[in-house]
Length: 216
Image 1 (cartoon, rainbow, N blue to C red):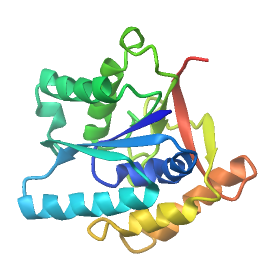
Image 2 (cartoon, one colour; image 1 turned 90 degrees about the horizontal axis):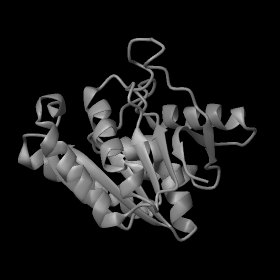
Image 3 (cartoon, one colour; image 1 turned 135 degrees about the horizontal axis):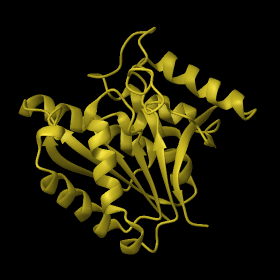
Image 4 (cartoon, rainbow, N blue to C red; image 1 turned 180 degrees about the horizontal axis):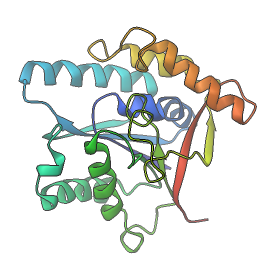
């Protein structure tokens, strides 16, 4: 089973899918993470990518792909450039399960990544694809303008009780990104959300997703 996670920015994949990545890795699934954007400062880019690789090693990621598209500028990047790179990743991996950011997140990069991913994941090109899920990203999903179109409405839960510690360890690798509580990108807030999502389905810790497509 091959799992592909699209992350607009470094650490989005840990915030949204970290516990599930570790869980699936322990089950023997092949995990691939595609980091879509990078900044303009070469030294900072190198540091953040090193943080991501350390985090991914903890979670059991098989391969990390850095596309290097311009951060905060995806909406001004030619669609053909984004789609061609996204399609290349999908065609290379041929994933069975895919996780994408929630299109209603505040950061426009998230919506652009999801739109491009959905183009690359068209059913007629991906007969092996079983499901696509949208994940929530703390400080993006809950901070956008509260409208029906932007709402994140969970429909799938993943029990990460046994891997929440790995998720927190992975997030702690992002020293450039982790904040002090009560910031949502703090370890305390991440664990609190996992408890809230877990309580919905009567487990200690969970991640929740919106089902976008399922072929059963």
